Image (cartoon, rainbow, N blue to C red; front, side):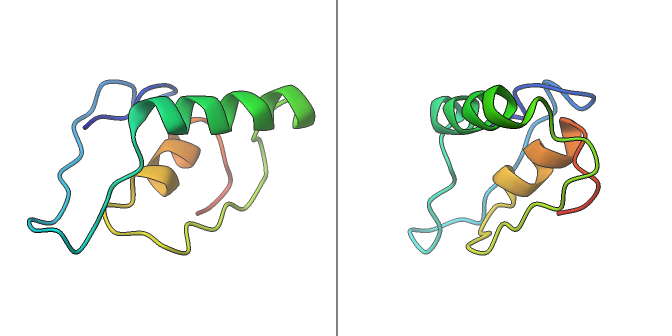
Length: 70
């Protein structure tokens, strides 16, 4: 698993071992952020809540793409 875009593109992410967490897949994160950028024009100055963070992939991806905080 890795960060797929932004300033931290390509950096690996390590999820906790076991079946307790299910990290958001690369394709799912790409689709989600594509829709957000299409509607909002970008993530600059936004706060993104990753409420079900197991690996933190969604939060790290949003920060990499320019969100103010996660």
